[in-house]
Picture 1 (tube, one colour):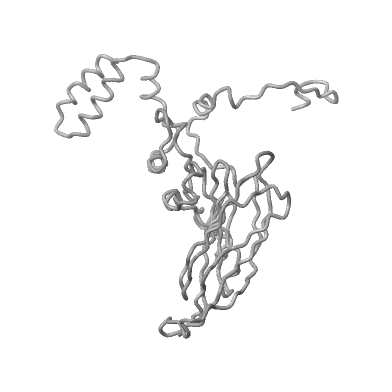
Picture 2 (cartoon, one colour):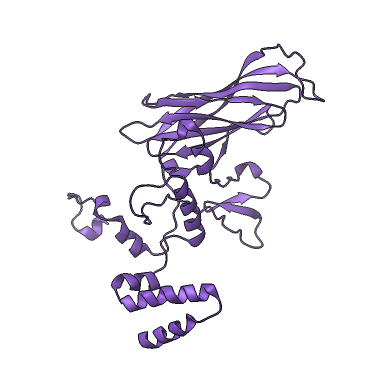
Length: 305
């Protein structure tokens, strides 16, 4: 069929549509080469979905890496497409394969956004390397409290950036010098890299404060952090939002929030694999481990399995 297909594609190069001519020229070039590489390009599916490839390329443009552009050099982008609920079901949503009861809004997991561009604009994070993934946000306070705090963990090669989004719900207060103080309570091996407070948070506004930790050199990056929201409060007119006393330096306050846990799951990205055999071959020998094991309590391999 190759000669006939080449003939049809050659005629398609005279088409009025630019895209048709471009596609025909591309396919002709591959067919005339006749190499094994051309066969893979034409027949094998992409190792990543097109919409995820677009997002990955956009992230790559923000922080290009030296060398040729390959799939291995592209940033990992998680597939955050929600699972559609089954029809005629009492549950209204599914998250990670678990049913969510109707009306239970607090248990729904928010999908991560693309934070790479925003984080790279912050000078303190400019040298952290490529963003691996952003963990879906977790609320650290109840929805009825005076101050709402939620945290998003951003995973870099040797650092973890904790993004705290703080909302002020009190109409006669202005929050200033807002920061979250974190204390790692298990290993003590985590090193504080930087902390960026929010300058001020007026009523009904949400501002962001960051805390960055350097990960331990060895071992599994598992930890538990105790957190406390610290800030100054200044009295304002509820109607206008203006300070009642411009010279007021504010009162220091502390507000406890829930603990945060770092687990192995935070370091794993959900990546779709359209073709497992192709993906397995792309891993290479560097990720392969060969070892011998003795199982004296079993008489055969089938019994051990």
